[in-house]
Image (cartoon, rainbow, N blue to C red; front, side, top):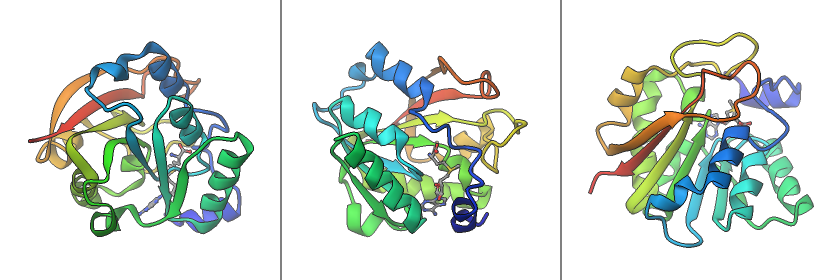
Amino acid sequence: MDWVRAYSERRTPWDLSMVTPPLRALLRSGRHLHWGLPKRARVAVPGCGRGHDLRALSAAGMRVTGFDIVPDVVDEARALLRWNRASGKVLCRDVLGLAQEFGESFDLVYDYTCFAALPRYLRKSYALEMRTILDTGGILLQLAFPFGGPVNGGGPPYPILLEDLAESIGPWFDLVEDFAAEGSPTGRAGAERWFVWRVRG
Ligand SMILES: C[S@@+](CC[C@H](N)C(=O)[O-])C[C@H]1O[C@@H](n2cnc3c(N)ncnc32)[C@H](O)[C@@H]1O
């Protein structure tokens, strides 16, 4: 997948142009407050794209750092944060190369369609990378989409199956809970599911 080209041609069907509705619903519900995260948790958002979700996490009091591999979209995400007077950083990095610079630097990783953006053979390395940047007891919060199989109308390229999660994330994380996503937009309803993973101690 050529992400630079997709953004430069503005062929970005995954981009909802708003905060992801299930994330908004989750933050409103306060469910995340039961996962033992510190106040003002340090959150990493791999593959943050244009950064809509960064501003929601920042508004919820978290210290956000977004990562994306496409320089122009990193600039767009920074501009979006500025426009919304939201605090946070956005860095141009390959999410498969964060460990050395960001070891144990975060309390929470929020993944929406970054795992799904990676081909299956890279997912185990990605999960290990996320485990490495998380501090002791850290949480990987994953909104899996498209979960269970491909969707029509522009989902990320590589769908997520339950066995993918067990195989790639299972070696380093324990599943805390999984539950249906609320408020998914048309075309994503039924294909989004939350998974909450904790770094194995
Ligand atoms: C399907 S898009 C999702 C973007 C954003 N999460 C959203 O919902 O709009 C996947 C994003 O991951 C980024 N990406 C893909 N591979 C990456 C990598 N190895 N390192 C960093 N970012 C990557 C792409 O540039 C793209 O912005």
